[in-house]
Image (spheres, rainbow, N blue to C red):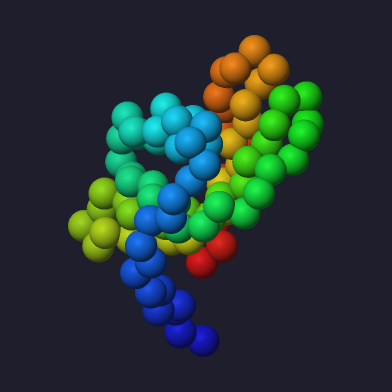
Length: 89
C-alpha cells in the first residue's frame, strides 16, 4: 500500500475561547507548525475538553505533514493543557 496523499486544507475559524487556547498551546512550539482545519466539539470533564483536527507540518528536510486529532483542556481555573495528540494520517 502507498502513502496517503494529503490535501491542503485551509485553516478553520475556531470559537474565540478555543482560538485563544490553541494560540497559547501552539504558537511557540519548536520543530512543527499546527494549523486547525476542523473544530469537532466540546465535552465537560472537570473543565472543558475541545477536540480539533489539525494539520501538522514538521520542520524536517522533507517537511513531513500529518493530520492529527488534538484534545485541548480548559481547567476550571482557566488554564489550558494539551490532553492528547493522535496522528490520523
